[in-house]
Length: 412
Image (cartoon, rainbow, N blue to C red; front, side, top):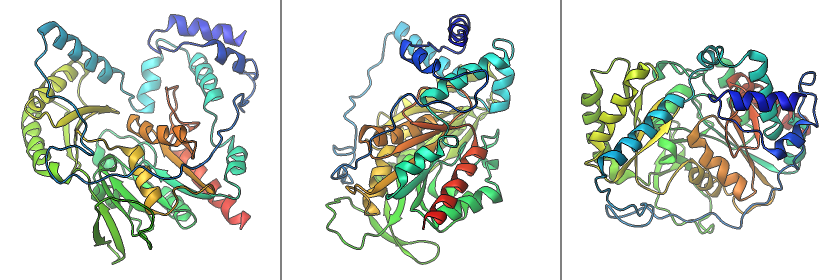
């Protein structure tokens, strides 16, 4: 009767907006939701095979131009009613944005009892198995392959906090990341600026991609025969090691700096609103803003952006982000790094991406669409995702990293 109860919850609790599909019901019947903590995987494991080559990208030499720039026509003013509908849609999105886990439990308490929410989550886990309870399956996929590990930062290696400046990773997490980086090529791909992420992590063993992959510090290939045709800047890291810098949005820097100043001035009187300069993108945090002011935050941001058609507005976890209108994201950053590491087009390579945010879905999609690896979503509530596996929180991410390192050492 568990699945009937689940259908009842979904129909009555509009807050969750979840629908139990017929195919899901078949999977639910395969497990005892009330007594078993280990999901039964009804779907086959992903079939993995690397593509022959990564797409090539050329840094644009004029502004604006084709290439990485998206072909988006200049926006025309919309009729009043349509503009109101668009603004209302953004407001709904901001209200639905994932709050911290403790708040989420409190917010849902009046609508869904704890056991019902747990039932919905465990039903979701059937389709997105825990990377911990399914670790043996992951090991079977990884056996005989070279792993490449890609990690988000906020909400993955550190907890989501009210003040973004306090999103510090623990010493234990840093040790776990350092350990896996000594065994596998490891990169952090974050929406933060690359320098800021490095200041948080403080590990020279990693590769870093900031601003959603628009600022990448990657390895220098020993051979140029890979067919990669991107314009990189040869540089050195903090230890004097030669690296390549790839910054496809470098021409936007003056514009982004200008917009940052204008937005900072525009929202300075909104209580709780916080600006963050992430070099190639600008973040407007509204986590500490009262919900009745969300609309005002959005209105002021869009008012500034109306004069900048080459910039676009995207949405993350309690944050509005202003980014260049170029065809580049975390998924393409993963492809770029695989190519730079000499791991693209190899059947014995298994990339794994771990992240919690909507922007990480671009990376999940790349791995899923090309059947070259898989994503692990960090979430304690059901979400639509292209990730194959899941973990609940950064603590489980750390446990997964430790298990991965132990398996590698035991198998060599």
